Length: 190
Image 1: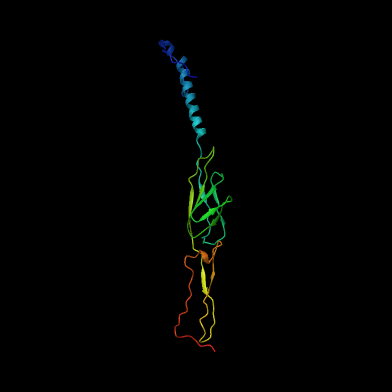
Image 2: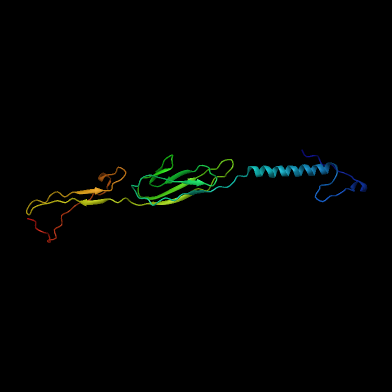
């Protein structure tokens, strides 16, 4: 508690004090007021130091390039504070509770790692990695057909290989069309 300052009138013989370097000297109310003020300031500085939080960083581990149709993969992210990190994605992908990312299409996927902090650490700046997911390869092949000279042209068909994630020909905006083009250089088979 701070003492109330009072006007002091001292005689010259009362001002003779033994001074030692580094020691606060004085008499009466002034000495205690200064000591209390110094103690109060030390307490304030100490409380501020106790409430200060430590900084932390977050890093995302490396992973291989991805294409649409690849199996789900785990994202590893760590904070310098050793606190758990949460993963979020933006783009044609999703993430489950175990931080496994499933690719839902080709395009740009942004992966974020976040650590919100606690009583000891401030929130970390989110880490971000951009992943360019390549398109899946779809192979369209005309099926072999045989016909004899003079016969009607058989129905031409194709096979598809490479659909992913439950997709099929129904998901194509324009299915493949097969045409017979005569070049005049064909071989006659007997």
